[in-house]
Length: 221
Image (cartoon, rainbow, N blue to C red):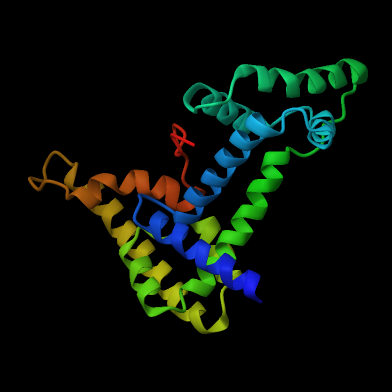
């Protein structure tokens, strides 16, 4: 019980910070978890036999997470290409053994990301029972559709109606802004689109599919 309380308190700190940033807070927290995993693996665990076994089974990371690993190596302190080489020596050796029929298991970072999304969604659902946290959530950009569905599934029954109402309201505003952007871009309409309308097409992309990030979120440590 104490462990869960401590974890909830820590989650509250990180999620409160994520709510102040652009886009879906769960997308952001999952991405931060991915980056921390990569940094820890490269800094501390590149020689770990269990991790090498996972890399042999998965043949390295998936395309998305391999690209993220490259970004972390290029931008973060204390990690070097040598650690990547050590891990991928195992993966490449496994490929050579298995050609022409390599058997690729699940990406270990995809598995971690799934657990992180479930954990953060569970904690957010609980935290939304707190009136102050709920107000902070309403002031935020809210959730993407995939993470809304996850949070709604995991949230206490008491908060679900409010959560659903909030998400409906966000989609109604988005729909209106998308329509207004199209209308005001017509040559025969002299009105300028609002900032929310200008941003609406980008919001539609992340709101329905999830937020993506062009560079690492964690710059140091």
